[in-house]
Length: 182
Image 1 (spheres, rainbow, N blue to C red):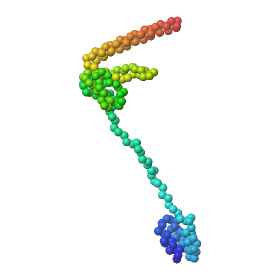
Image 2 (image 1 turned 30 degrees about the vertical axis):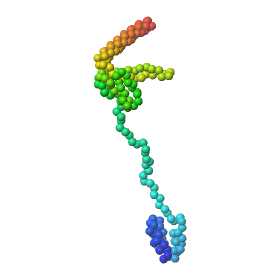
Image 3 (image 1 turned 120 degrees about the vertical axis):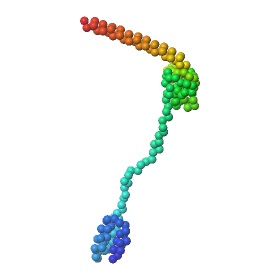
Image 4 (image 1 turned 45 degrees about the vertical axis):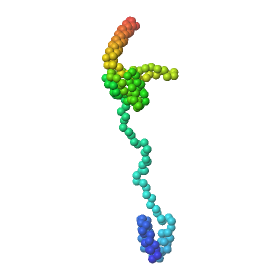
């Protein structure tokens, strides 16, 4: 009788192993003392361990992203600009202001007068190193077009001279090969 009351009070714990022991204790007649010793032994107390079913996610501190700042060249060489037009938006002075070009607080280059945009590279020395600097100018449209036409004509002449030189070199090489083959 004592064993069954102990079992009944412990039945509220639940668990399959305890219920099997309770059934064996109720069927035992005079050997209830051995059943009680089994019930009170420390090996018989089973604890359930609950494992995580999902991995814990860590927090991120650098997951936000901002929209692009739309930097870059807004007016390309030989493009017409009016006074106040933005030519280049930049961080720092990658492009330096030249003639008739101003600089804003955020290093934006803008036209100070109407005209056409001209980009040039100026060589300079910084210590022992030779460097080139991008410079942006705005000149009157007619002056820029004349200068551009002159440069194009010069480039075409240089290209023609190079083509003639290559052609003459090819003829010379062919004659040399013919001499060596005979």
